[in-house]
Image (cartoon, rainbow, N blue to C red; front, side, top):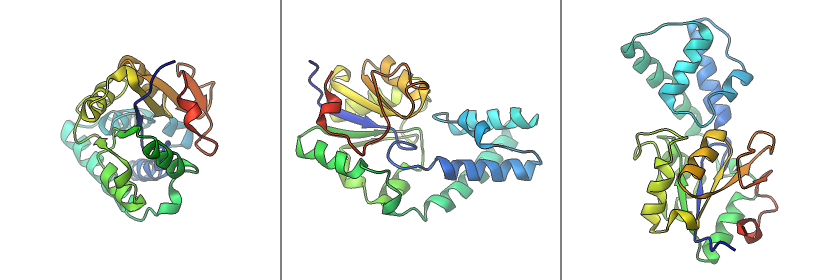
Length: 215
């Protein structure tokens, strides 16, 4: 049995559903550019960095843009997104998450955030979750997007825990791949058919206990 000493969490879709706000902001940009961006299209952006997401969006719309124009578009989308998430409240924490974080803390298991988001502090502060985390590694600290393992390896380093003693909770295929490449166990949050590379898949944290960390 593996002795798990730390849990690393993705943010969007794992702790809080900010995906809907990303979608609203990307859709607003697409509307402004004159094409339709659907929720199905949005699935392709899960776990992908902002600029890579913009490239996908522009390819859907068949739009070419200079680097300068892309920077402007990405900044505009981000401002809309920040406007949405500054209204986040504690009741938007996904079911069971707070209880599971409390269980981990009570059992001396370290907790880190491993997210591509550059807005993670705004989100965690609004949700009043900052005190639960021993380390917060986000898009302001790393340059490589998942499936590169950088975000999780830095999380383990900041926690002072070996990657082999870490478990990652992720809802995206790119995140699961990043966890595996970091030499960590991966627990998928969502559909087993999508997250097949995960060591385990659970629907959410409603029923989660320390048993989920047994490998």
